[in-house]
Amino acid sequence: MTAPPLVRPAAARTPRRLRHAPHPLYAELCSGPARWAALATFLTLLLPLAAKSALWQGSWGHTQLQVHTMTTLLAGPLAAAAGCWQGGREHRSRTAELRLSGARGPLAQFLVSAWPVVLGVLAGYTAAVAGALLASWPYVSAGRPLLLPPLADAVFLTAMTTAGMVVGRLVRWRLAAPALAVCAYVVLGFPTYQSAAVRFLSPAAAPALPALPVWWQPFAMAAWTGGLAAAAVVVHTARRRRYAALLPLAVAVAAAVPVVRTGAGMWHPDPLQKAQVCDDSSPRVCVNALDRGLLPEVSRALSGVTGRLAGVANVPVRFEDLHRAPHHDEAQLPQLYLGQSVVRGELADPERFAWEAAAGLVARECDATRADRTDAAVRDWLVSNSLSRRRREAEAARARQWGDQAAVARAEADARALTRLAAMPDARRRAWLGRYFATAGSCDGNGGPAL
Image (tube, rainbow, N blue to C red; front, side, top):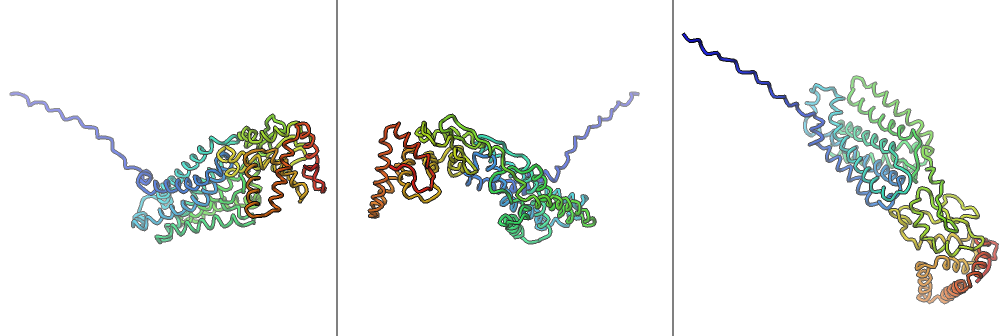
């Protein structure tokens, strides 16, 4: 009798690794409104920044001040509207009741729903800030960008998004999001037109010109805006323990006190603004240390003026970009304003810059009519560029066109005075100019030597 064949049991198969369901946050980031929030924030900042690029490219301070202004006044209300839309999305999709029966607590559910939009807004903001800094970098000659103020603005955007979501959950109205954006714009912008120190509680409040904040200012603003938003979230989600909102509210109030008490003292001028860098011409040409990259171009624009002043007595020893009244041995350069005299690291109109510098050199603080013709001749001879020539020709043509014989006579007399000055021998002209600059700017009635 043969034994039955031995049948071995089949080897147990190891089950394939179970795939975990994606985290809700990941799903919201990939397919929810986070992408649209990122795109809207990026475009909201990019378009106005690009339209005003000439006003900030070339200076870290102007770049970051412009980005901060656009972030608080435009991206802030947009973030509040995006959060409000996300908060009302649960009512529109009829998932509010399902959320109440979930295993997660109210706060966890709120964060899972809010963070996708928050991350989308922050992603768009980060891209816009990085783009602005990169666009300004090729034209900046001194200084460095600051890190803490953009981080404080990121906290502000987070606070606006979460506060907007609280409003969206509470207000069941389809137009709540745009209405909230308009209200946020008014609330943020209105204090900037006030004079009281309380206006600095608005994140949109900033100095008129670029300045450095004190070390604690970004932390105080982050605590102020973040504390208010955190208190609102706690009150909304922790219904049985709403007293927990007192902690973030206390943080916000504690941060607001030094902000209001310090006011405009939270910013101070950049130390580089008080320093000057100069060339080796005579008279020397000096610019603010923040604009040191412009020195070669400014020196080249004024080379005609400084060359004709060489060897002349009683002239200033240097031209400076001053933010104060000049001393007797200093002449003030025309202000280097971004978007006007300076565009993307270059002088917008070198000839006009030289004409304004020469005009400031012979300007008088009083009405010295007798010296007007002499001052104009010295100014035009020092400049001697096409702009000066076109101005004289345009004035003469306008006088002839209007038939103003007195103006025609004045234009002809001015031309003769300039011709006499230009025809002088060099040594005699230097001596004459020395006597002229000895009384330049004087209001004693004599006006110095005449032509």
